[in-house]
Image (cartoon, rainbow over all chains, first blue to last red; front, side):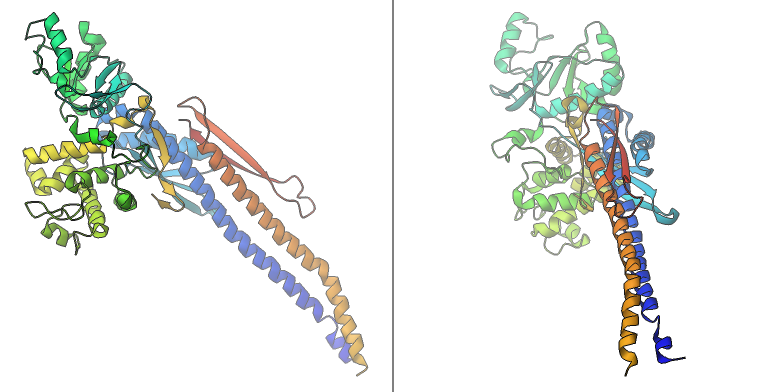
Length: 436
Length: 90
C-alpha cells in the first residue's frame, strides 16, 4: 500500500465525526429544551388552574365561610375539580389543592399540577392565586360619621350607612345567604344622634326607639334587616348562621336588629390621611398603610410562613404601630412586641431589629395558624399564649386578648371584603419562580 | 516529497464532499431549536391570553394559540406548534 492510499479518506471520518458531534450536541440541547418546555407547560397549567380555583372560591366565598373549616376537604375537592378542568386542555393534571394561611374562609388557593415531560416523566409546577380585597369605599357613595358615637368613614349597603368593617362582614354574610336563596336587605344602619332624635320624636316609646345618645345605631355596628313577615326565611337563616359572621340579634323583641360583635375597630385609620396613594393593596396583598420601608419584609415573611400579608401587617400595627423601638410596660420589645423569652425561643438576638423581628413574628403566627387552624385563635395565641387558648378551648376570656383579636381582625379587613358582590380581584401570587 | 500536493488535494476533496453533511446537521440542529422556540412562544402567548381572557363570569374559556415553526428543512413548511389552556372567567 502506498502512502497516498493509507492517507486517502482520513478527512472523511473526521468530518463525519464532526457532523455527528453537531447532531449529538443538538439532540442534547433539544432534550434540555424539551424539559424546559414541559416545565413551562406545567407552569401555565398550574397558573390557570390556580386562578380558576381562586375565582371559583371568590364566587362562593360566602358558602365557604358558612360551611366552616371542618368542611375544608370538601371545598378542596370542589376547587380541585375546577382547577382540573382548567389544567386539562394543556395536558396537565392537578395533583393537590391547598389553602395556604390557615385562615377561614381561605383567601388563597395553592395548586400543584403535573404535566407530561420527556420519556414518560411528569414535570411538576405549583402556583398560588389569592383574593385581593377591593377598595372598601369604591364604586358607591361614602360619607363620614360625626355628631356622636362612631366617628369615621361610612360606606353604604342598600343605601344605608355603616362602618367599613360591618359592610365587609355583611357582604360575606349576604353572599352566603344569597347562595341559600335568602336575600338580606339593610333597612337601617348608622344613625347620628340628630337622626335618632328625629326618629324618637316621631315614635317616643323607648321600647321601640331608643332616645338619642342611647341607641346602638350610633356605633355604626347595628343593622336593621328585612324581617317583616319573616323576611322570606331571613330570620331563620340569620338565627342559624349570623354568629358565624359576627352578627348577633341584639334584642329578643327586635328580630330585625342585628349587631356586629367585633365592632368597627380602628379600621377608620385605613382610610385616613396617612394612607398611601390609592391605598390599594399591592399585588403582594400588603395594605397601603404599611410604611414603605417594611412592605417588602412583611410580604416576604408572611408568604414564607403561609400567613396573609394583610394579617401580619395588621398584627404589627396593633402591636407597635410599626415602631421598632417600642417597649411595653410588660417588657415586650420591638416592632412585633416580642417578650425576651419568646424572642430567645425564636432565635431573635435583637428584637428591636425589624429585620429579625418581622420574620420571627410571621414564623410564630404561622405556627399558631397551623396549630389552631383559625385566625382568631392564632391571634389569641400570639397575644395570650397557646396554653391559654388550649385551656379555654377558644379565645380566652381576657378583655385585652379579645380586644386585641377584634382589633387585628378589623385592621386586616377580615375576609368579608373579598366577597364576590364587591368585585374583589384574583391575582397570581407568584413572580418569576417564587411566590410573593 | 512528490506525494504531498496529491494528499492535500485528497483531503480537500473529502472535506468538500462532507460539507453537505455538516450543513444538514447544522440545519437539523437549527430546525430543532426553531421547534422549541415556537413551543415557548406558543406557551407564553396562551398563558397571557388565558389570564387576560374576559367573558361571562363563571364560564370556562378555552384559549388556543399556534406558532409557526421556521421551515429550514424540506418538508417542514407549514409546521406549527399549538398550545391550549382553559380558565374560569372572572
